[in-house]
Length: 85
Image (cartoon, rainbow, N blue to C red):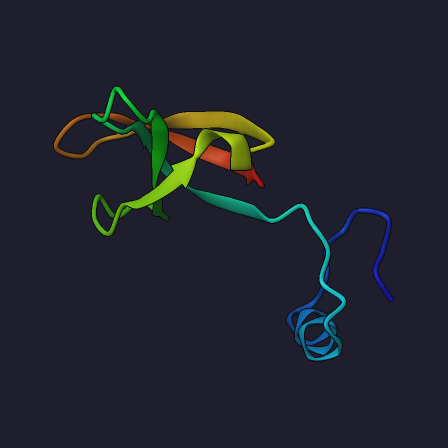
């Protein structure tokens, strides 16, 4: 059973996935930067601390971002500890 903190063990999470009972928010930790497309501003997200495999994330799908640190890369990028969508 899910605790009030929304934290699950890996097995509890798998069981919820199997039952189709997973609920938002989904929180990811990684690096974030702004896309260069001024006509369609969005965030680019890279899981963990690898400065690669950036995924486009529309701004309207993000509930909140908690900036944790700055991660060195080709350019420094904020490390988003709580990236809720």
